[in-house]
Image (cartoon, rainbow over all chains, first blue to last red):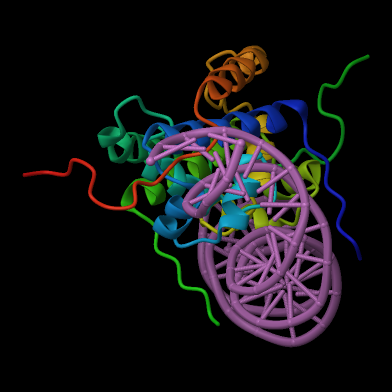
Length: 110
Length: 110
DNA sequence: AAGGGTTGTCTATTATAATGAACATTAAAG
DNA sequence: CTTTAATGTTCATTATAATAGACAACCCTT
């Protein structure tokens, strides 16, 4: 069956932003689309659609492009990514391992 | 031909962080994996691999999950995403429309 | 400690993204 | 203003992600 997905405005804007950041980073570094695509091991066609902010491309590919052209994700200083990652893992360990969904209304409205 | 991709440590860390942020957000909101998957219109299997930080899933799906569980992307206040997006488009318009790769050495080292 | 919901994980099948090729258009640079 | 590299864009084909289903292990609650 044909998949039909919808994306919130927020998601579409975030995609557009990231695509633009990558394109800007590429141009500022004097790389052609072909240059960057080869460097990342993808086709120029895929890079094109990523720079356009398409929702379909693989997140790993997009993040790799960001890394190559120097777009910072989550941290101003990307040397701290490991630190943040560890912090999050620790935080996660403190949370319940599984979420219990209440059978009926628990204290819903009215 | 079989595709073989490599990802930098930075990329893998960013993926892990985002997966953890989504999982933490989900748990803190008391949603089961099934809840969140349905809400986003994806399978629990896919959500699972996203929370694990896999590079393959579609970026639009991952961003949508982030939006649902309240993970902020790029902006502390996501109401400003549109503003940032516009700013980037304007910045992009000021850059050269195409990058010219020099034929030979231009002024390389030594 | 038991019962059942939740999660971790694997596996076919199906839907779709990635690719390379192609071509028109554009714009950088001589 | 001419040249030609770079970009925008579309289109089959191929590789792969998404899915549903299944099952065990786990944890929560009673």
